[in-house]
Amino acid sequence: MGDPLNAREDAAEALGMVARAAGPYLDALPHLPVRDATHAHLLKDLDGPLPEAGDGTIAAIADLLRIGTRAATHSSGPRFFHYVVGGATPAAQAADWVTSLLDQASGLWLTSPFAAQAETVVLRWLKEMFGLPASHGGVLTPSATFANLTGLACARFWWAGQHGVDVTVDGLVGLPRMPVFSSGYVHPSSRKALQLLGLGRDSVRTLTRDDAGRLDVDALDRELASSGPAVLIGNAGEVNGGDYDPLDELADLAERHGAWLHVDGAFGLFAALSPRTADLVRGVDRADSVAADGHKWLNVPYESGVAFVKDRSFLGRAFGGWNAPYLPEPDEEFVNYNNLGPESSRRARAIPIWATLRAYGREGHRAMVERHQDLALRLGRRIAEAPDLELLAPINLFIVCFRYRPPGLSEEALDDLNRRIGEELIEDGRVYAGTTVYRGMVAFRPAIVNWRTTDEDIDLLASVIRELGARLDRTP
Image (cartoon, rainbow, N blue to C red; front, side, top):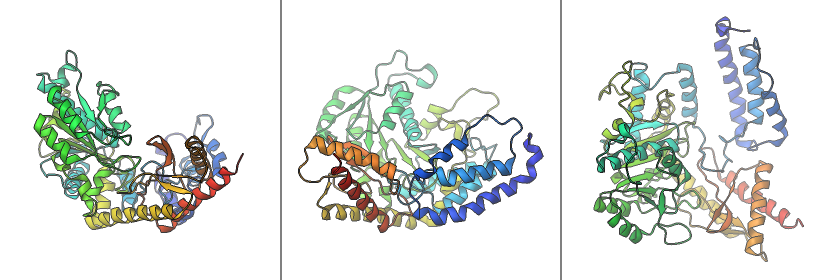
C-alpha cells in the first residue's frame, strides 16, 4: 500500500468502520466481563514483523477493531472498580473522536485559536464547579501526576525566590533542601512530581497521628515554626479509604507560617460539586495550587488533568521564557498554554471536557457524584449484612475499603486469603477490583466512579468476592 497519500479516499470509510463497530460494542459493554481471558490469545495478533509496504488502511483498522473490542480491558464499562478510573460520558467520547478528527496543535494560540479558546472556557467552568476563585490561573495537563508536577513546580519557583534565586534560570545549585510536609495520605504521584523536579521522591516528611495516616496538625505547626519557607501537600481524597486532610486547618497553618499549600485533589476535588460532600474540601479555595484529574470523576477520556494556581504569574515564570526566537511572546489575551505547563506539543484535551460540561452541566455532574456515593453506601450495607465481609474504613465518598473475613482465621491467614481472592478476581474478570494494604491489613478498595455503574453491578461485586472467598477458603 505504501504512501498514505495513495489511500486518502479510505479516510472516511475507516472512520465509518469505527462508528459502525461502536454501536454493538457500547450496547454490549454493560454486560461484558471486564477482561475476558478467552480472548487473550488475540494479543499475539498485534505482533509480527514491521510491514514493508503495509496492508492498507481498511485492513489495519479492521484488524484493530477485531482484536481491540475483544482483548482490551473493558475499563470504560460499569464493573471496573480498580484504581480510580472513570469511563467516558457519551458527549465526552464523541468529542474525543472530534479531537482526533480535527487534530489541533493546542499549545499556541497561533496554531489553533479554537483549541486555546476551548481550554480557556473549560478552565473557567471548572473553577466555577470547584468553587475556586475566578482569578486563579490554570492549565490542562495529561494527568494528575502532571497536574501535581505543575503545582509543585510553581511551589519550587516560589520557594527558591524566598531564598533570592530564580530557579528557572539558575536551577537548584546552592539552595538548601526544600522542606515538604504532608500526612500519611500523600500519593505516589506527588512523590513522583518531587522526584522529577529534582527535590527527591522521599523528601516529604509525613506527620501522622495514627496508623491510617491522618495528619498530626499540632506536630506540623511545630515543624513550620522552625523550618523556614516550606511547602505543604494537602490530600483531598486518600486512595485506600477516601479520607481527606483538614484543608481548612492546613490553609490556616500556611498563612500563619508563610508556607505554600498545594492540594492534590485528583479525584477528591469533585466532592465540591454536591452539598452532601462539599465540606470535605472546605478551604481548598485558599490553597496556592490545586491538582485534579478529569478521567476520574469527570468521566472524560485519558488524558485530562488540570492544575490551578492562585497567583497565575507563577505558571508562566515556572514554565515560560524559553528564549526561542521562533516562538511568540506570552500574551494575556491570546493564551499560549505551552508557556503555562510542562508540555510543548499538546493534544486539544479541552474539547471532550467542554462537551461533557456543555452536555450535562453542573447539575448532571452533581447527580453523578451523589449517585456514586449512594452506590458506595449500598455496598457498605451489603458488607454489613454479610457474615464473611468486614468494613475497614468509614465510607465518605465512593471508595469502600473492606476485606473477606470468615471466622477462625489468624490475621496472617486473612491477609493471604484476601490476596489470593484479589488475584482470582482479576483472572475471573466479571468485575475488577484490586487489593491494597490498609492499616496493616490486606483489603479491597473498589472505587465507584463510572457513569454507567448501577445497583446490579455493586451487588455483583459483593457476591463475586464472597463466592471466590468461600471457594478459596476451602482450598487446602
